[in-house]
Length: 278
Image 1 (cartoon, helix red, strand yellow):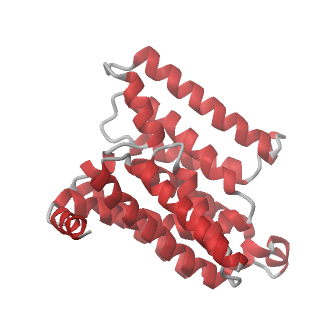
Image 2: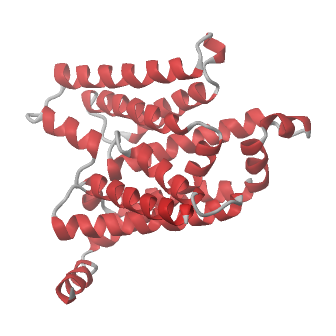
C-alpha cells in the first residue's frame, strides 16, 4: 500500500499527469451536470448517438488531414445534437428512429472513410482507440488543457447562470412554456452543451464509452438523493472521484484510461444502489 501511495506521489511530479487530471476532472464535472438533465428529460441515449456522430466527424477530419479536428467535429456534432433534441419533428421522423439513423449512419460512414482514404498503417488500432479511448488523455499538451478548461468553465458558468430556468425546463417543459420561458432557446442551449461535452469527453474515454460518463454519475446520485440540487452536487462529486481514480488506476495497472474510468463509475453505482436500498 505504501508503495502504491509513493508511486502516485511520484506520478504527480510529471506535467502530463497533471494535465490529464486537470482535463479529466473538468470534463467529468461538466458531464455530471449535463447527465442529470439528460437523464431526467429521458434523453440518456442522445449521448451515445452523438458520440457516434463525433466519431464519423473525426473520420472526415482525418481523411481531410485537418490539423485541428475540433474545427470539423464540433460543428457537425452541434448540428446533429440540435436535430436529435428536437426529436426529428421537422423531418417527420420520430426521435428514437432519428437517433438510430444518425448513430449507425455516422459510424458506418466514418469507418468506411477511414478504410478507403486513411493514410495510417494501423487503421484497426486508430479505430479501436477512437471508439474505446486510449492514452490520448495522457499525451495532452498545455494548449489542449487550456482549451479544455476554458470550454468546461463556459459550460459550468452557463449551467450556474441558467440554473433556475434549466430546472423548470427539465422537470415540466409545458409549465415552463406557460410561465413565459422560451423553452426552445433553453433546449437549444442544452443541445449545444451536450455537443461540446461529447467532443471533449471523447479524448478521455472514447466514442463508445462517452455516454457512460454522462449517465452513470447521475444514476448513482439518484439512488441516495431526492432533490434536484442534491443530485447535481452528488453527481459532480461522484464523477470527479471516478475520473481521478480511473486515471490514476490506469497508470498504476497499465489499463486503458477510458475503460478504467467507466469501471470506476460502475463500481460506484452499485455501491450507491445498495446504499439506496438500505
